[in-house]
Image 1 (cartoon, one colour):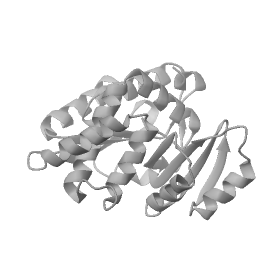
Image 2: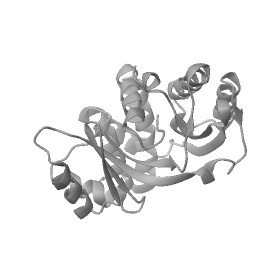
Image 3: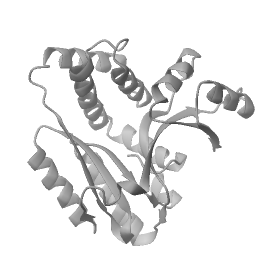
Image 4: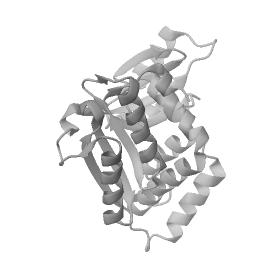
Length: 247
C-alpha cells in the first residue's frame, strides 16, 4: 500500500507483496486491462501501459504474467468494464485516507470500503474531505549498491528530469511531477536502472504520528484494504512506528 514518501512505508508494501503476490498481480492485471482498453495493447504507443508494465516489473511480476494480462485484455476489450472510483475518509486519530478502486460492481465495492472503515475505527467521508491534504507526485525508488555514488546518482536523476532526489537508508528516492513521470522513468530505464517502486502516488502535506493500539488498528485497516481485490491503492498520512512497517 502507498503511504507517505518514506522507504519504511515502501518496505512494508514490499513485504506484503511477497506475502500475497497473487493478489498484487490481480490488481496490476486490472490496471493493464484498463490501459489496454483505453490506449491499445502496444506499449510503444501507449504510455499508460508502459508505466503500468514498469510498475509490474517493480513488483516482480514475471514477464509471462504481464504478456498474458495484455493478451487477455486485448481479447476481452468488449467485455471489460472496470469502473474507477475514489473514496475518502478517516482512520483512527483522524488519519486521512484515500482509497482508489477498480471494480465491475460499484455497489459491492462501496459497501466493502465502508465496512472496512467502520470495522477499524474510521469513517467514510465525502468527496474532497481529505484529498486537499495530498499532492500527486511520481515516485521512483532505486536500490543503492556499493558501486553507486550518491552525488553521481543525484546528477543522473536530475538530468533525467527529476524534481527532487533523496537518499533514504539503502535506496535512492526520485520524485517527479505526474506529467514528467513517464519521461523520467524511461530516461532512467534506458540507462539500465531497475526500480523497487515506480508509480504516481499521492503524498500528504503533513503526517499524523500514531503508535500502540491506534497503530495496530490502522495497520489492520491497511491489511483489509490490501486483501480486497477491488482496491488498487490506499494513500494515507499516518506516520507508523518502525516495528509496524516491518513484517
